[in-house]
Length: 622
Image (cartoon, rainbow, N blue to C red; front, side, top):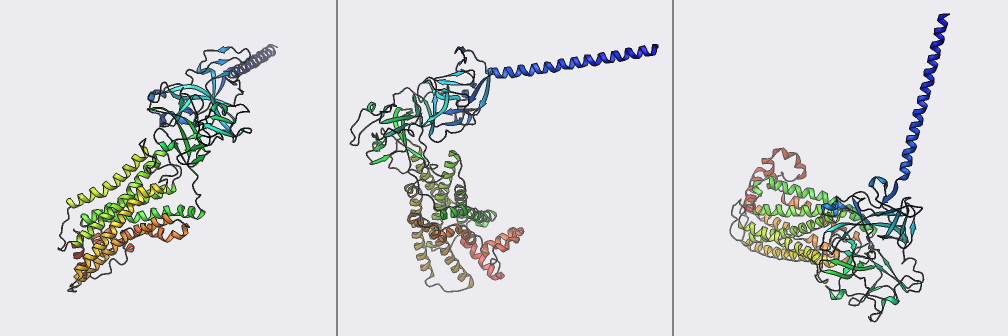
């Protein structure tokens, strides 16, 4: 009996424990639910806000772009400005009361994943707007937008003018509206202002900044008489023209500015049909925008004009241009091999040999750079211009060192004395270097001055690297900074060739074949003439002709191939010779496995090889 009572007590206690456990678990579950509901309620109370650009970026009004603070500006204090500092006040949805202050923790921030406005719409910004706690917005003009239809971000500005420090400016809201020019049904034209109203363009930094200078449009009729703009511009349906502000001209082929205060020929007018007219040039354009430009000299009304579209590259040109760079890279290997061979053999590092090395090094940079330019389509502006300047310098240096080679060979053959043995680089090479490096430097520097110095006449040709591609922009710049100097150097080389041939003929008069060495020496002279002729630029003469004449790309394939193969010719002319190859194998036996590169170099008996080596040392040690 007592045992049954204990068992009953045990089951009762167990049941009580189970009941208590279930009760506590239920309470815990309810607590978690309450906590989760509380978090959701707090999240619902957060103010939704969409930032136009990513963190660490600011919005560039007018250009409708996001720019990096760190990479674009040098002022460090800008980076320390928190995004939520001086955030605009928020308003209650129901009663319109101001909610202030608002802590950063009160926002539910999202990024807009910046995209451009759809076709037929443009981006509009407003510094005067009201934000509501439900995420909506209303502009000062009364335009109401829901959450997701707009974004907010900072713009940068200057407090006084172009010479003051940049500061993190006010918040603005960005949203899309129908393009006034696209819906201009009852109007005859449209004028585009580059920056939003109340802002001017800082051309040096390519930003729109707040500026209070009045925006006055030079409005004229066809005869050039000034007209009253108020009767033509406006926003009503009776207005004949409409001004669309904050629409930076989107030029597919680059843009240039008209600055009447600097160049008289840049004077422009706006006609009643909205087109821009340049009287000095007699041209009319639609692709433009005008605005006040801010600089250290003050504020000036200027226009940005689009370059006309370039002729579309034919399919055959595209195919060929996609193949040529790889041939340039392969040819560069032969140039590098030529340079290395001269570096390995002290016997070749005399005046003539080091001159060859300088010529080959310049040509290598030119080939690699040209190939890179043709293959690269998305380089930054700095890298693009830097690469173009480097290739420009290497291009000119290739021809100046070729000119030095031509002169050096003429000087050698014109001197009727026997060649003197010397392995030292003397004063003559110093003069050669001064000439060969200075000429390209002067031309390249002049080109960059023309590109970057303000106030120069528009009639001065400019390289304009990076406008469309990482190379010259117009035929005039090609001829002025590249093909013109190159043609002069080629003409000088031809003159040296004629004088060298004349001097060689004089030395051949009365010469008898006394021995095999003299015969070989004469053959070497003729080989030098042939080398000189190849290196004179015959290949590049055809390049200039093809550039001037134009026509099908297939027509000029032989000359282009000849240009590319010049590097191979250089290798066989300066390296693939029995005398050079013999020295190379003697000093570096491990390179004998490369005999296949020059199969005919070792096909001489010992006596003939000895005569050639002796003649070679006499010829190259000048």
